Image (cartoon, rainbow, N blue to C red; front, top):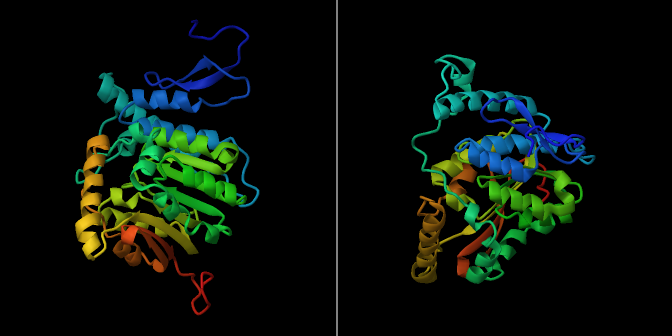
Amino acid sequence: MDPNGAPGVARRPHFDLHGFGVAQLPGDRNLGVPRPNTLLHLSRLADPYRYRIFRLGCVLRIASTPTSAATGRGCGERRISRSVASLSGQLRSYSAARIGRPGTADTAGSSDAAMMPNPDPALNPAPNFDRLARPYRWLEYLSFGPFLWRCRVRFLPKLGNRLHALLLGDGDGRFTAELLRTNAQITVHGVDLSPTMIQTMVRSAKAHSGRLCAEVADLRVWSPDPASGFDLIVSHFFLDCLTSSEVAALAQRITSSSAPGALWVVSDFAVPRTRFGALVAKPVVSGLYLAFRWLTGLRIQALPDHEEGLTAAGWSLKSEWNWLNGMLLSQLWERPALRSGGPSELQ
C-alpha cells in the first residue's frame, strides 16, 4: 500500500514514533484523530510509554466532542496542551534510550529530561489485566454469582443528583454504563491501568460514550486535576489491588480534587472477625490473590485498610451493606460540606 495513502482518500493524523512528526494514514473523512484500536496498537509499540500515548489519544478524542450541557465541562480541554507537550518530550527521550539515536535525548537539566517520569522504586511492578477484559464478567458470575453486581449497584439510587464522577478501576465498565444510563446529566472520568479494559468500558457506554472520558493511568501515582470538582468517586473491587499506604495517598490526592459534600462508593472484599471469616472468607480471599498473581502479576497479597485511609483524608462512613456473611461489602462515604451545622443530604 502507498504509505502516503491512495489519491482522493481522506487521511487522518497518525503518530510517528520514530520521527515524532505527524504522518497520514487513509481513514474516515469525518475522523480527526486515530481510532482507539490504532492508538492501542501504537501504545504497545512504545512500551513502557503505551499508557501515555493511549491517554493522549483519549484526551484528543474526547476534547473533540461537545461539552456537556448539564455541567458545562469538556472532558479533555484543560489537559490537552500539557499532555501534548509532556508526551512529546517523553517520546524524544525514550526514543534516544530505546533506539540509540544520538543527539535526541537532552542532558540533565533540560526540559525534556525534567518531563521524564520518575517512577517510585518502592512500587511493585504494575499488574497486567488485559487478558481478563473479555472473560471478566463470566469469571465473576462463576465465582460469586450476582453478589458482586449487587455490591456495585446497592447505592446507585442515591447517586441521581451527582454531576461529575470519577470511577477508579471499573474494569469492563458495566457499572460505568449503568451510571450513565440512569443519570442523564452526569459526566464520568474513568481511569484504569489496562488499555483493553478502557476499550471495553468505552464500548459498554454505547450511546452515552460522549459523556465518558476514559484515561489509562497507574492510579498508584496518578493525580487528578485540582480543578476537577468531582462530586462522586466510585471504586468497585479496586482498592484491594493497593496497599494501605497507597490507598491513603490516593485518598488524599482525590480529596483535594473533590467537591464539598462529595460521595465515595466503595465495594470490596472483607474478612470478618468471625468464625466464618477465619474458616471461609480468609481462605477464599487468599485464593483470589493467588489467582490474580498468576493471571495478572499482582503482587499485593492482603486486603488494605481502606477505611483508615479514607477517614484520614476527611471522609466519613454514612452507610454500609454486606453480603455472604460479611465477605462482600458496599459502603457509602461522604466528604463533609464546608459549612457545618446543616443536616447531611444522606440523612
